[in-house]
Image (cartoon, each protein chain N blue to C red):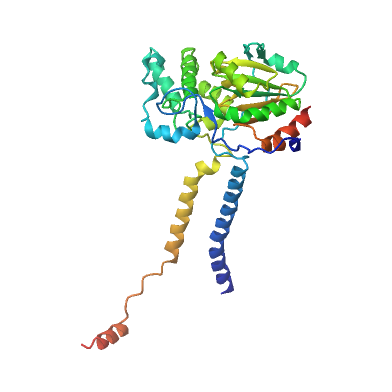
Length: 178
Length: 187
């Protein structure tokens, strides 16, 4: 089927992938992820929910919404939380989180709603499962390996030499030329 | 004594073997990154293998909007393509979508976070490969799909199950290697 298509340069990867507004503070409108690095360099990141109109009136509920947002990844910026990101998608997520907090959903329910759509990738703290077992198990494995190494090193250490016998003491005195 | 030399050899070779295995794994990863089948920043779709979410969107005139029921009523696999006029990769992708349309692939477009006038101008300038065009200006339906940028394409079979998702602009390689076989399989 592709033989019927004349050759044109193929565009691979997500370097050109677009988001309506990028991470960090910058003018809105269409800016691609490729320009992101430049934007981040030019625009100092500010706390995203500095806009009071986004916040819930009840400080307790707002604190809960922020706690949830801090656990979720902004999928545009990827190393920023939903709460810290200026990306459009992160703003949408914040709105959804707040509306669900208002309707009385639990933190777990809200995070489950997000992972149902975006998978565990959206969680900044990955859950323990078969895929992440090596990740979470690495400290324990490192500790075990270290412990074994210490035990082996101790076992290999040569025992302290026995004290000199009287005969040896005499030879030593002779040699030292007393 | 031979036991000891064997042990010593093992101790020397084991790290070498681990390093070699790591190297091969790394090389395989780079290879898959180069041909576009692996993207370390990619977000895997949760929708593949599942039913299309319930949705109903208004249309981009003159097209009427569409809903999940409309996609099911098509009676054949449909490629749902999220796009936007402000998206440069969508411009890059446009000629390929036009070719797919010529080959009678039903492509249904969803204009994501876009103004109607801007969408109309985009379709006039780059061609309109879509059998139907709906609008998702708030971007809320896109979140139910798991969209995290545009363009994104979803292949839905006739039973409403999402069979494939591609995030980013489609390329001829991707179409030939991934989309075409699926279109044949689910036709």
